[in-house]
Length: 350
Image (cartoon, rainbow, N blue to C red):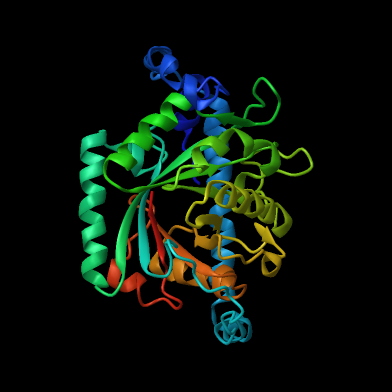
């Protein structure tokens, strides 16, 4: 979410749309680093426009969510508060992350200091900060085991069409492997986040399947950057239907079954109603635990209003909550987030 200007143009040249299999990842390291060094100081007006238009859209959408929770929207608010959480949810299988754990994740991309905390700090500092943050959540709720995670954007929406006209850029295998090493060395989880642009879930998942065969790797989809009818990222907020989410869930189930893996986590970002259509039709299968992540930023009032509008009003399964170091004013503390019902089991920092 919220890809700032510098981030996209750096990634656009660094990643080079690498589509090699994981086995060839190491050979691209020196090339990627050389390209990165050569473009850090360059400007890209197209991506500046992407950031401005996207942030304007987001703020307008979230302001609408708060209005829906105001006195004028009291009737809808009460209806949302009275929605019963689904009772037909599958029981967790052995090895499931939820409900015994709470994930605390750092989001972003190490090639950019502006896409999220994962890349904002030098790796050693970032990893130490995540460990400290996870301990804060463990102290706030001693009944749930905290599992740290790195949430890596592996497919990045682009304002420019790119070589194949899909308005998305795939990160190199060498980059994915580097972040994967950080996770596996610490017994943490890794999420691969996909912004399809004008591509599709079906087209983007195959290259990630070798990683998803690893038991610690999970998947995330970002409907904000799923563009339909030729729309460009940043010109409007994108959308995904339950049918697309179900395609990803089916792929995860196939990986779990074929490789005798513990259940996967399937995370979906959301901060408007239209970002996710037919949410109640999302498949519920114990082999792929679904989390709808409330991805809005702003004041506590704004975030709580968005939570009621897009999480409570259309319950799916597990809930997530995103915290922004720079855009939440002030940023909610763990104890405050845990007052939400149902309490989020996935916490993400950007």
